[in-house]
Image (tube, rainbow, N blue to C red; front, top):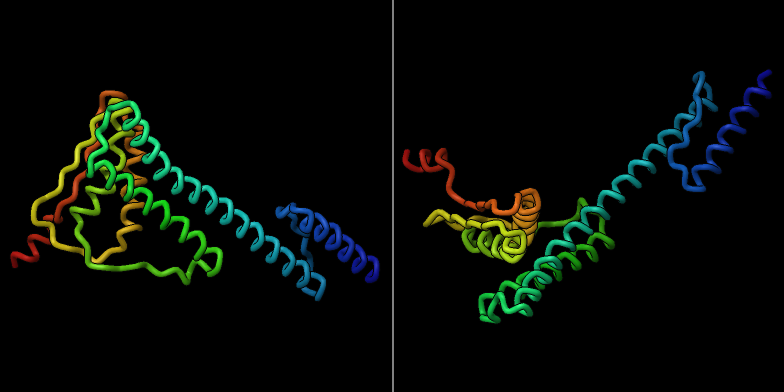
Length: 209
């Protein structure tokens, strides 16, 4: 009876391990008792769960990367199409916006290289004292052709005299870009999207004290 039970457990583990090796990360074994075979079964289930979580995170990361890369590419496409159709003039402001999107795309590709070589927890932010006005305005302006193509109005409202803030320009531009892109996508034709930046009243109150 003991040998039959042990052989049965080993057989179940073998079948599950083969399926796991073939890519079925949902494989688990039924664990009963508290002996060495049961402990082996629990260890297998923990390993399989870890692999399944890692695969889920990998898929989510690929989806996030695709979304991040699509944003600057779509902006560059919008600007170049507007230039080709004569809707925009190739002045310094337009070319500078396109250049900023190219730099943004370059940084994203560099991030992929870094993430491929190191673990995500080792990734460090490039924190510098920067202008909130400039960061927000540049990130939002990149989406103006997208808004105009959808016949939506893009409004940028920046409070005067915003103090410089320690931030990672590329990361903040990514965050603002995602927010503005989603806002334009879900705004009906003829609507408007407002991007604003201001000092919270609570901070002003504390400074006044």
